[in-house]
Image (tube, rainbow, N blue to C red; front, side, top):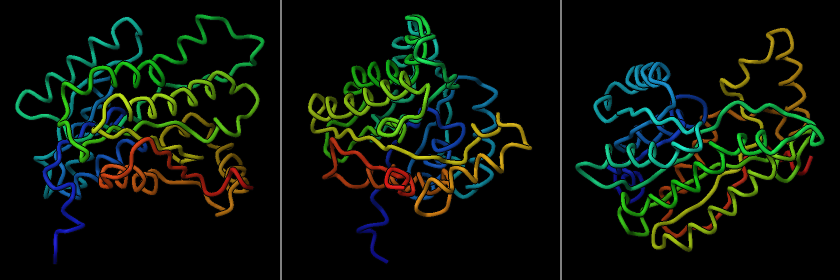
Length: 261
């Protein structure tokens, strides 16, 4: 069988920030299955160790291609030095081909009238300042070619926010702006963004077990596919953006048609 299509990511160096769970984990797993050499990053060593164990168990034939490195993005003063340490460490022998940013912290929805500057800023540490500062550093640690890419993550709530989502929607829209700006600033390195809808990940674990079926049913009703997304399905969008060297400044929405429902 020809490698014209299925060998595009073979031996590609991929970094997944937020790769210890959810969408990021499945992107890492998917990339490994296509022959990439993948480093996942997480804020805590315990989460990283568990994720690496699961990755190596699910992909035993390529277990030696999976690596991990801690990088905490929660403190705005240390985001840049932590990212710089991460990038220097994992590119000591070879530059990166792709960076995927799915990192995020817990979201506490608050009425807009209750928001104060400190709260607003904290909500953006990981989801906005993280990718912005990453973009400023990335060019020194990536191969400068159109086959290299950065893929950021926003969300459907930008275009259809619920009550209390003003700050999150604002930062998400900003992330999409960052992607377009980086596509210009970092060219020929490409930069794109994936906008997921409701996806059943570990973040749903915080919902009480007796309420979870109703929550999932509500999301299903708000889609055209009568379903809630899976992180495995979402990984397809990130893989496409890594593989397609003609895609930059692009937005891919994966939401089951919820914006039309």
